[in-house]
Length: 260
Image (cartoon, rainbow, N blue to C red; front, side, top):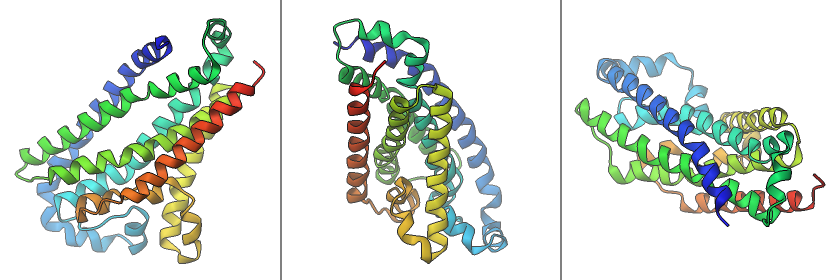
C-alpha cells in the first residue's frame, strides 16, 4: 500500500541533500560578511530606495535576525525553495504519464487517489531535510561569529514555512494532473509561483494593489515578522494549510476522472 511512497521518497533524498548543502554554503558566505559590514549597515540602508525594503520585507539589517531574514529567507527561502517545491510537484504525475510509467502503475491494485496522495506525501523528505538541516546551520553559523538567534523564533520561521511550501507544491501538483507534458507543467508552475511572489511584493509597495496581494501565498508567511519581532501568525498558517488541502483535493478529483 505504501510502495509508491517509499520509491518516491528515495527519489527526493539526493535533491534534498544538495539543497541543504547549497544553503550551508550561502549561510557561510553571509555569516562571514556580517561582522565586517554591520557597522556600515546604516549607510547601506540609506543607499537602497524605500520600496526595496517593502518589496523584500527588510527590517533591522543591523541585527543578525534582520540580516539573515533579508539575505537568506526573504529571497532564497520564500522564492527559490518555493519554486523548487512547485517544480517537483509539477512533475509528480505528468512525468509518469509522459513516460507511460503511469500505465504500469495503474495496472496494479492501487487507486488513482492513492497514487496522487503517496507521491505528494513523499515531499516529506525535502520538507524535513530543509527544515531540520537549515536551522541547525543558521544557528551554528550565528554562534560561530559571536551572535545568536532565539531558538524558538528560528524554529517557528521554519515550522510556519511548511504550509507555504506545501501550497507552492500544491500549485505544481494541480498543473501536473492537468498538463501532460512535464516540461510545460514545471515551467508554468515555477513561473506562477514567481509571479505570485512578485505580485505580493508590488502590492506591499502600492496600497492600490494591496487587496490583490491577499490572493498570493507569500502574503501569509512573513519571515521577518517571525525572526525580528517574534510574531507567529498561526491563523495565516492555517489559511495556507487549508489552501493546500483544497489544491490537493482538486488534483485528486481531476486525476481520478482523467482518461490516460
